[in-house]
Length: 226
Figure 1 (cartoon, rainbow, N blue to C red):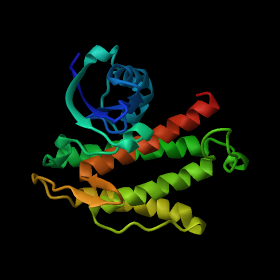
Figure 2: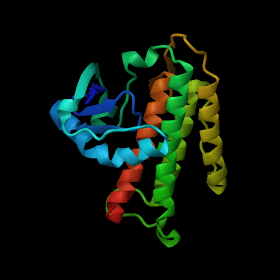
Figure 3: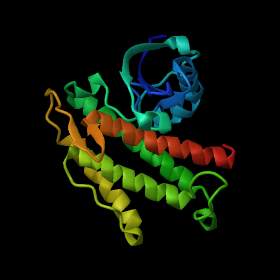
């Protein structure tokens, strides 16, 4: 079985995010490097339908030994809090047309996975808050807010959503992110852009949006016992 390239983002308190470089959204955290890699293995069967949805062949790794750690980066307090926070050195590399198409297919699959889980929940439960975490509707709003921040990686200024038009704005921000990815110059190095407290590159923005949608989709699935 071919090795799967993985990058590790290591927070100041040693919390680690393991991220499969060629499979955006497949990203799990642990208390140390080994724990994060084991969590990535555990998430493999859950990621397989996402890859299938994107039309990409995917083999579930049998163990963490399938992974090859190719990059380690120091994280921030945000890493320790529970979210990927910094771009990788590889995020600045030029993108080919095939790279961009792959990012778009996987990103769209991650968004759609969240949508499907959300819509599988009875409408009368969308505003029900669990003992811990957000209600489904609050989670949807949180994703919209964060994707507007991800969009700022490509230039547009961040704007708070209008709650009365959430569905339209959700569709619009996704269309804008995809359009921004499609408009990227091919074969050029990307200079990081500092906005909203993060340093962005297009690949990092896409990878973080994919992780965020999938992380919350799996959180909802966990509540539903799926």
